[in-house]
Image 1 (cartoon, helix red, strand yellow):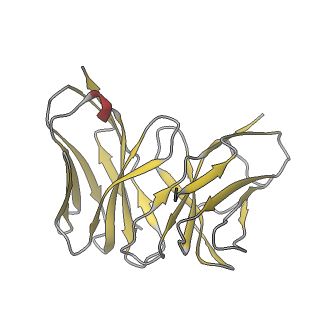
Image 2 (cartoon, chains in turn red, orange):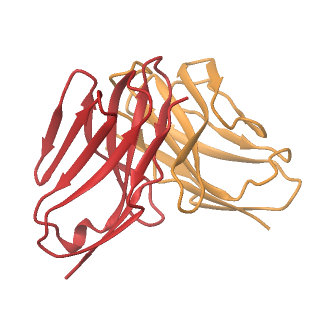
Length: 112
Length: 114
């Protein structure tokens, strides 16, 4: 059974800092990995989707990487801003399709 | 505007009552999903549907039921058999259930049992 772990559970950084969020998974037989942002009391907003055959995806200040051999994905946020404060979740789509497994998330606080 | 809508935003239930949460999408997606989120935790899959008139149990289906009579609608009923229903419920959809497809989420319904 796929298990997804996100460490740390919470992170606080000063504005302007570059940071990395980590996501690890136990089963490398995945179809894709998706990173989401969740604001308090809201739904999930999709940030980046990496297919199994890809190594990374970029959108603006965000860069996500995928290393299936080590069972890791990272989300890099450049030049962090207070508006980046939110919970970030990663999700693995199972190779058998139809189901995703989510991590518990990392709650990021960017201080002005 | 294309997207996923969920209603109501907040729902209160007395113990022993069944309640139904609405999820509608106008993205023309085949696959739809229901997740449950508890405080400080990730999402757990309740049910999913790959196509109209078809659905499968997820990891925590006990005490829940669904229907998929129309492509755009996937309502979730929380029955009295669900022992701890207080949670945040999220509906999602994707073009298909194929592995490469991106999931999109609705704004959620917060259910509280009184």
